[in-house]
Image (cartoon, rainbow, N blue to C red):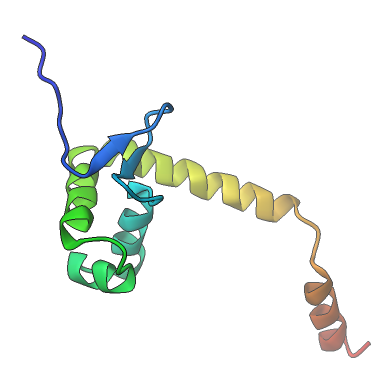
Length: 104
């Protein structure tokens, strides 16, 4: 018998990405707050008052139920960001700061 996985407050989009129901917030965004800043569910909710505490806990529960898969997605996004940064030309502000440091 096949088990159907049900997560309250979480929906998957057409690409299989988890979102918090009735919001425009992806589960990965809540997870990154938790991992990057060490924020608790309560602190995440305080910083995102449009989310209920139940929604935040649901996002964290989804993460821990799918940790390997979501950690891999976080790593893919990080690699993409590093590649984009490496390929990008310096911004006008970065050029001005570099010129100032050189004394030009």
